[in-house]
Length: 147
Length: 92
Image 1 (cartoon, rainbow over the protein chains, first blue to last red):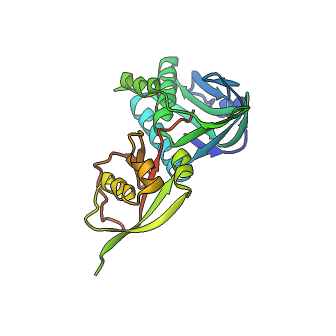
Image 2: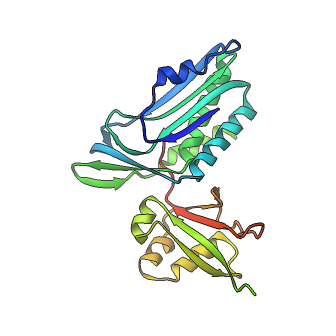
Image 3: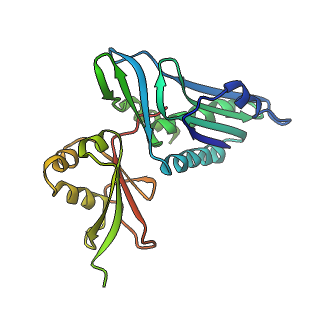
């Protein structure tokens, strides 16, 4: 499974095309993007920080768990860092499998896991200044359905 | 004889900004074994350290690049120790 932590943008079409193979019958993808409003704060861009070394290891572990739980053929996780303006792509998680059920489930599992385990932090910069985004308790609760 | 363990501490996001540094190398007494004890040791510095690490803020900790708990112990299978403190993650 391809894993990349990068500043540069990514091309979803090219990434999904790379997952196609003879035995693949389903590809499910999720793309996270920068919203312009968060908690009533009008934002201009996000500054995304991460923990080099741990981030890659954490994403590898999430991919390993997904492969262990579902019969999947391949996948990709790309997460950006640095300055990301409104509407920019932040993250891509995609999974290829023989049938759709495994791809849907594995994609959602990887995204839910990433939200609570991968060491990324978002800072919103807007007209009212800068502030760190607070973790959502709902994201922590969502992992319960996978246990 | 060794009187302590050399540990690289790293700080991220809001924690990094509060303590005003990204990382530092410290030598901690051998009695300090758990992540919670390291956190308490940082509180002992007082000032902004006590505010950052002593508060009820839900800090996360990672040892050797893996999320862990406050009762996780430092092991001696290596001499290269890295402990990181940071707020709950907000990626994706």
